[in-house]
Length: 593
Figure 1 (cartoon, rainbow, N blue to C red):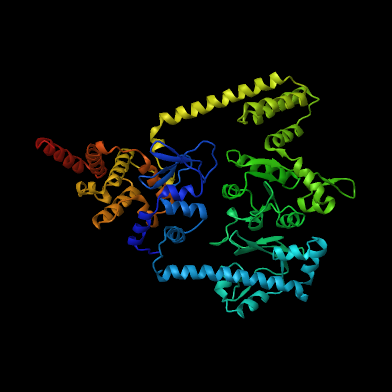
Figure 2 (tube, rainbow, N blue to C red):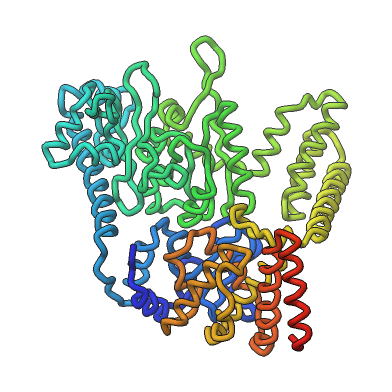
């Protein structure tokens, strides 16, 4: 979007990035910067820094950085224009008129959301139509979902036909391309289209704003796939969607429950557990964890009680190990089948078989993550055999060594010792040896990294890696100095973007110089709409480094000489080039250069 630079300058002039960030997370001032726990990755020690003077943020852990607009983009999953619009509203500024391209994108997004809502209403209406009778019976008899909760979650039916939805939406003025863009129709081989969902139970996916952003569905016959979701679109991204969060965010319960299936969510809400959410058929991601952290401090994992569910639980615990979320695990007992064997049971099964009170009892008896992991380890060993007991001790010590609290290690060491018939001192000794080994390995890794400082100076993004570290460090310093005071550009007329070894640093230098020449402010936040996220990350990391004003002039002269010298060295391709450089250096020396 071509937002006028004058408007962005006025917006940035009214904003204080400390205020913007503080609206999302607590910050503490230490020295010149403000610090907090990074909202973009999981950490227990603050590495997220906000520099008020430079109006930028930078995380020394994950590397994200930029200005106020970039921060809001990341926090709210917004585009740059959307983030600017949000910040403008907070600053009391009216957005300038949109250009045709941006207006078109906004209109297409609005049309997709309205189309999704109309489609949800159509599918809902089919439950009272003969074409949806089978789905209605499935909801009522098989799933035992009451009319109240069927309506609450907007359940519907896709008829067993090729064009039911297409015809209904066509009557409301929606075209073929819009149906395809929304993921509701599929293009055929002969230029036609057909309904994507046929003979299916339909479940609209509603975000926390109340918009229908897509659908998930379950087939009514034996065809494949059993479950089918809206494909990835600009508004439907499975990695960051939690089904049921639009209701669960308002729960009065002290935690959230995470289950595997959408029907599990509805069944538990119906049973009184309105704090239940589910991922969209994907493993838990960092985006999910970040989203959960906005609404709760405790998460109860309630995955299926089979091997896949146990693996998913272990992965989820590992993912949240460094987050502020405390984790409990609700283990569903296996279901005894008619033939006497034990089978898989999910939350939906358990509620139907034993009722809400029994599930509440399981909730109250749920174990924390350490207890759960130790119980999983225990199942893998025959403690009647000495060799197996020794292996159990080593495996349990791996779990205990990861616990940050010495009190927790002491408590669980005692339980492991009692379980295996081993003294607690022996368990604690094994844990201490393992922790010492891990500290030694971490120290060795740090020493190896310190021996290769060039690696530490490289951008995190491989695509932005420096080919000439010496020149790139000087180029970074030049940017820091001109960001300190744009008037230094007057001394850099001989530097061009081509002199820079890093295309990104050269690009940023030229963009900032153009702003200075036009009489505009020279700041990194002013470039946010012109740079990619990874580029902003690297520039913020470079800008975050300190640069004293009283040494800026001397540093600028040194950096300019380094950049020009490295540029000339890079131009040497032949003996003639080398000779020309030697002659130039002799001449410079003769004139006292």
